[in-house]
Length: 138
Image (tube, rainbow, N blue to C red):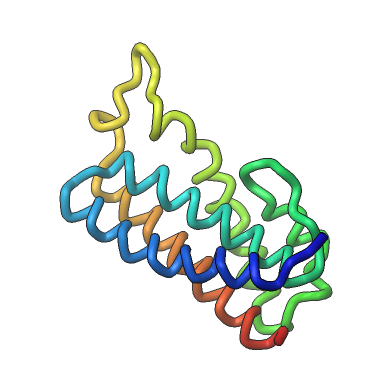
């Protein structure tokens, strides 16, 4: 069952989380920026699907599902969503490594300020796109 209140809740929580990304960044917790930015993007993607009346799948990156239904999106965001696809997939690919690391991969030693800036930018773009969708599809 699709729940409009749930989509709104995801959106509200993501606005807060995007602000929190800045705090991780200030503390130079770049791996945490990566992980949290991915979670922001994931929740926003699922909020978009819910807004479109689609029950989101239970996996971490659903950008392909959104693109499959792009005809249901407002015209002004279709291109933006498609352009963000690779960035969403990049964050998804980093999700576990940024959080858990590996025996030979220490997250805090790997991710840089530039990586964190990129993640914040991706999350910010997805937030703006979601905002446009929510305004258009009342």
